Image 1 (tube, rainbow over the protein chains, first blue to last red):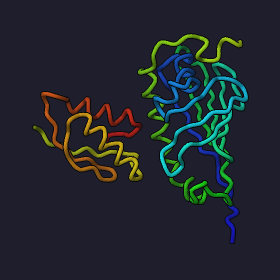
Image 2 (cartoon, each protein chain N blue to C red):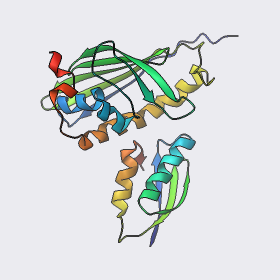
Image 3 (cartoon, rainbow over the protein chains, first blue to last red):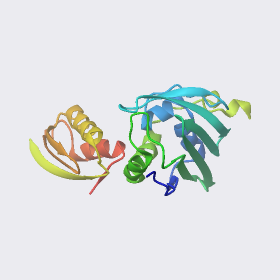
Image 4 (cartoon, rainbow over the protein chains, first blue to last red):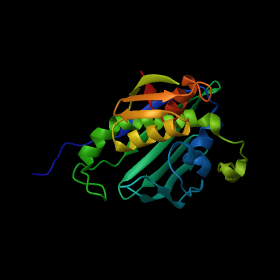
Length: 154
Length: 64
């Protein structure tokens, strides 16, 4: 019998001491993403198709930028089913970051055969590690230029 | 050499163990990593415990 219980989005909100532009650099540049996630060929352009080099068994995964509104909102599709979205709010020099991982069809499984309900249960806490890694990576970011962050098109 | 045990929050799989082992190795520490715990010896003249903790936290884990 197929599972029918819907799986909620995995959503994490954190308030960071860093300014919004710096947080944007962490989530919307190739080098920024590599610091907290994995190597990739991301570009901050609507519709850009890129890959993230995830650990096995997931491995190299195709992604596509679906929303980019610097420095407030970024979303990209990850693999066939998932969407990662990031929303930033400026808080008087600090930044509120909301990360949302959606697309958890309870009747589907990963390409390596793990049912989404199993992986989802694992990642509800596992995503805390990812987000903490993101927040701690910001101080390691090099100085950047506007063209690296998608600001040139604004 | 000093020996210590850190209780680590957020470890959930073999990848987590591997990542912590790599951090300890890069720090010149030697020991054993299990889910939720790392016991290791380190050279205080080469690396401080705070530096090892910071490297583990940079991976996204919390130290209890």
